[in-house]
Length: 260
Ligand SMILES: [Zn+2]
Image (cartoon, rainbow, N blue to C red; front, side):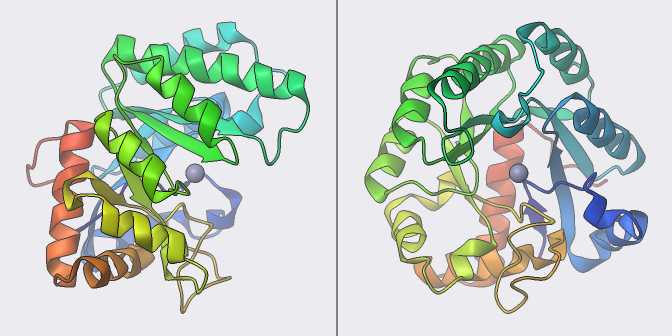
């Protein structure tokens, strides 16, 4: 069984003491590919540096809605430059977060950055990795306004109805360990409603450790629990769910299925 963790933040301080140990152990644990999305310029640079060291690790370049304080749209020139690196797999993590951003000004500013980065993804022919927290309407509106850009709703919190809209737009959704939590009914409905070909798996490490590891630091080895949950909902083997989501991620990020 091989697994593709499409979203893990390995520059995070949570890996400060054992980052290399954790990353080096992933291929032998079946995690054959990982995408590490940046959240601002420094963490995008750190993700790029990790991608240069580990053949199985790719990075995404972008400004997260929670990291826009002091940012200006001209910072996107550097995002563009970083994204031209051969191991850049996506523009991300970008999007809207109305849970953390409360004022109309902050929200409008985050929409400007999101729109500009969706356009950048289209310009560079890279997929977008989208964070959408409590902002489904505006996120979907901006995605629809950029028909030349493809992408994924990461850590999917959409309703089944909105997920079908996303599917029609040609976009993907990905699921974290929170699908193993007791209150995951809605996510399970989305998994049931969507074709397997549009689903990817991720950990969002160091956050979102699945049951029975909930509350611990998460790393990509736990992504098998997400594959297990998808397998249960779809009535297929865990191996089949792992392989299908692996193939989906290769296709989504435009990666060759060559031995690393
Ligand atoms: Zn993330």
